[in-house]
Image (cartoon, one colour):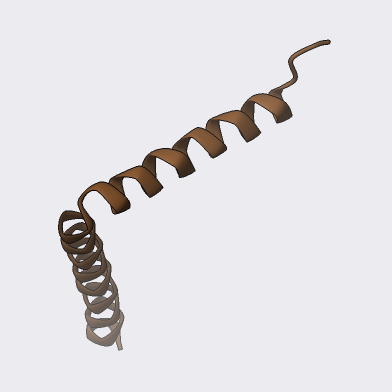
Length: 57
């Protein structure tokens, strides 16, 4: 049985998913705060891009 890149990607993906689920179950408040911070960063990034294009025109 040969180990292919596809099977390794699947294993790594499942391990990452298991780690995220464990983190959410273990400390939901921290996970929620992290997601909130990530979303705030993305919103700030999008607003900066919109402001940049508005200043061009």
